[in-house]
Length: 178
Image (cartoon, rainbow, N blue to C red; front, side, top):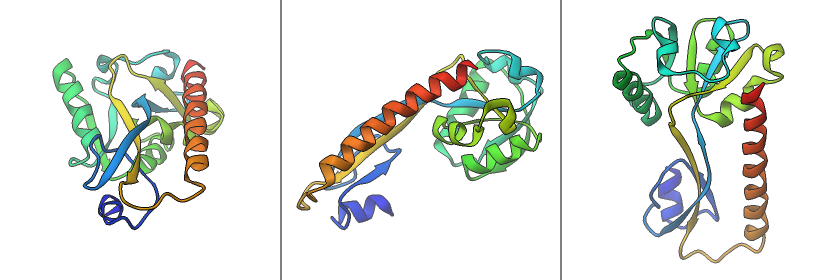
């Protein structure tokens, strides 16, 4: 729907997880950061600095919906590693995965932006973020309509988004190291 509206030149700028530009648009990568594991505070695996697929063997797992492309990559990672998880719940959003993990219902793998925002102060926030030993890139891109007259503030807004993306990558690196 966002992509269709951008293709129809109805918006000045969009953010998307797509890798290809919609029709009549250009696309530039804003942020690439790996998916991360989220664990409830106090979980034994929270003591590990990096989690490997084998660490999830037999663990209760909260997953994204089956049609989600990141879910499919996570499932492929576990299949390639021969790891069986205890798939406890499926939900359509990374926010709800984190909420369910925070309640101690299992572990999850989500995009780093959602994990970072919901982790709060690490252990005090009830949610712990850890990097994975396997890369599953999360991609955010700027999408611009090709034929729409550029809004006079678009360049400044894009520069602010680039700065915010850089700050988020720094914050993410600090969060996953604690």
